[in-house]
Image: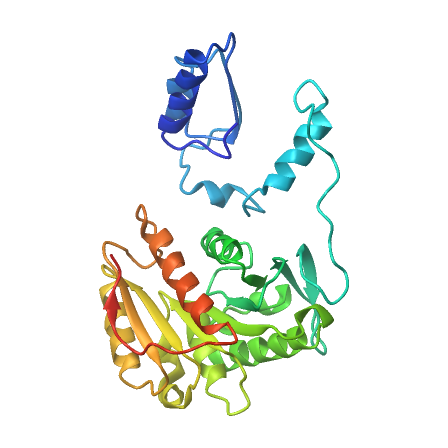
Amino acid sequence: VDDGVATGSTARAACQVARARGARRVIVATPVAAPDAVEGLRGDADEVICVLTPQWLSAIGAWYGDFRPTSDADVRELLARAGPVYAPNYSAQPPPRDDGAGRGRDEEVIVDPPALALPGHLVLPDGASGIVVFVHGSGSSRRSPRNRYVASVLNAAGLGTLLFDLLTSDEEADRANVFDIDLLADRLVRVTTWLRAQRWADGLHIGWFGASTGAGAALWAAADPDATVSAIVSRGGRPDLAGARLADVRAPTLLIVGGLDTVVLRLNRAAQARLRCPNDLAVVPGATHLFEEPGTLAAAASLARDWFTDHLRPTAHAHPSSRQAG
């Protein structure tokens, strides 16, 4: 079973391993795949089941409404539903969820600061001491596969994440709102205020992760004297959109830019020169603006993870420097 097949190379390898281990019959099942990949798999599998074979596949995540990683608990529950033939030793009981002041949450939420109702997805691991609020860029949403991937890396490191839609559906209809940095920054502040009021968030250090225009909004908001954010990470961001307010940002800030994203890299270097807070500029070699090249998004996620784990702890300390990611 694969969540999507682009080239088919790993699926074919899995078929060959299954044969070598003595499988009498091999079936490949996937919801979406490239047409030529399906044809190639027919030579290694007895049967290929595929729902969609679009001519232009693009990214696998683009074909999903919900592309967050599947947890071990999800797999155990699904195997248990299939019956004892497939999962004789698994329990169908989901992991306990703490509805009080503790941790251990993975759920859809409605972020409802005054006069708003914004859908979001919250993950809060057991023992989390920090939570990162994601501020997506223009044309994106809480379902962004790239942000979801970064969130999963942070979750694995014990950090909570909140991905939410910055705008309502009516607001999104007006394209000007997508680039209204003042509006987006105000929205982020209101959502953060809502987050701090939740019982389960008591004592958590809060960070902001911004992409593209969302990074500009995060830095704009962080310049407010009352901003209480503990750390900021910008991925392929537009910090220049915060303009003269950059000098007033106090939270430790990491700027991550692709080495091949030359225009945005130049903007980030100029913006870094205006920052007075502890800061760092990390350049990911071989990456373009969306970090679509193999390994580049993983490198960016690792940089963000290290920055947040360093600064969202009670003993947080800053490391102002400039480095290049390997």
